[in-house]
Image (cartoon, rainbow, N blue to C red):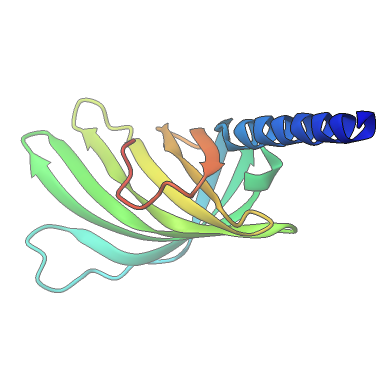
Length: 171
């Protein structure tokens, strides 16, 4: 009788610990650091645009961040459309990204803006990232923002479970 009670208690404690560990694993991990890029392929000017813009410009970027799962080289395919409002130019940009490292890969999308004006010629970039993991990162989502003027840009993001990603991002 005693060993059955002890076995049940050990199983119950083991179940509680496993449940607690799952809760910890599902908590978002904050990721901070920097990214820098350089253009490897010039984009094409799309026909029919009323203003300047480009399609399919390829940039190679590197992430130097606090979580090794997101450290590595990233290839992005970029698109932007420009609009001018008085002395301010705004580029609405979007594209795709892929990051590979020794343990897995991340693939996803980005969108955001770049802007400058006659009075503040430095480009201000703000891009939202949304990547899903593969390999060792399968089931994870990397979501965040990169922003800055000159490189390196600041990275502020989270890595968390991708199970809830049935709809568009709420970030």
